Structure formats: C-alpha cells, structure tokens
Length: 261
Image 1 (cartoon, one colour):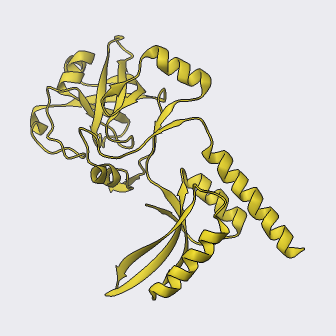
Image 2 (tube, one colour):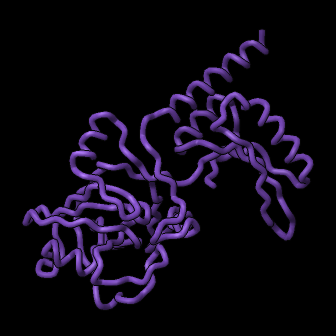
C-alpha cells in the first residue's frame, strides 16, 4: 500500500511538471547570437549586487511591459566595454537594463511626447533609484531625452537578438498565449553531494530510473573544488523556473537546495 501511494504521488508530481512545461510559449535559448556569446549570456543572468542592492535577472516574453524613468548615457562611456562584451557605441540604438536579458529588443516610448524607438539591451544599469533603462545617445536623441535629460517611458519587449516582431504578431501571440520568451538558465534540485565519484554516480543512476518517465528531467553530476578537495554534486535538472523546481521538490519530499546551471 505504501509503495502504491509512493508511485501515485510520483505520478502526480510528474504530471505537474509536464503541465508546467507544456505551456505554448516558444522559448528562445540564450545560446550565442551575433552580439553576445553563450558564456556572456550566462554570466549576465547571474544574481549581482551594486551599491548594496542585489538584482536577479529574469526571463522576459514578447509583449511584456514596464513603466518608469529613462535616462541616457553618451560620450563618457563611448568605446568602453558593455556587460555583453561589446564596445559601447553611442551612435547605435542600444540600452542598459538591470534585469532583462542581453539582446532583448525593447520598444521605448516617451510618455511625455509620444516619441518611440527600438533598442537592444547590451548592458546592465542604470543604478539610480527610480530609473528603469539607460538609453544610448542615439536612442535618447530619438526620444527627445537629449533635451529633457530624463522622461517617463513605457518599455515593451518586441523581440530578441536583433529580430523585432510586428505589432500584429505580438497581438496575435498575446491573444493565443504563444508569446516567445527568452529562456534563461536551467533550474534544478541538488540531490546530494559526495566526496567520492562512485557515490555520486550511484545516486545519479537511482534518480535517473525514478524519473525516467519524464524526458524533460535529467540527472547530472557536477564536480567542484572546495578546500582543495573535489566534491561531486548530483543535480536533477530540467525545470524552466525556480517555482517549478520548488513545487516539484516539495511534492517529492526532497530537501536539497534549488540550483541554476
């Protein structure tokens, strides 16, 4: 009876994961683009702290919006390296955002004069209270920021990696709930940490058999160096969001921390 209950619970959890992963959104992976390498994408999506405040980058989807204050930056930063590894060019329409992924295409609309332009995120910032985006000089000039300095704006995600979706396409995706979204990192659950590789491998195989019904999930062994010694960690990966990983962990009665590849 206990064995039957165990597998009924497992079936319910697996169904939950399938439902969470079966949404119709089309994922855009953070692999290399014409502008940003996969390694840069990965590093810029890690949690970071500036001026005592911690920021957690997150995924976005086409049609997502945000409102706040925009500023612009120009000559003092021209030629300097941006967060995605490019050299800042004040004459190109790019921008800095604190949490949205690199190469996210954003339509910025100045709510004070109605002017708008599309920028590509390639930097982190601005780190001034109340500001949500820092536009390049070219984008700022298009919006009229070269005269006002700052302005209240509305941001809308309109594409990724240089490709801009049409207004009709965005409206259709919203209506059918098929918005493309930028996929960030692979979330998972740590199943154990071992001093010996054999122990980690045995645990990996055990959980691989347990969750083999769900092709989305996979168990991996990650080696790390701690105190001059190698530690082998076993991770259950394949969750799109931290929430999905947490729900599955609770459902399964697992106790390991949530991890991010």
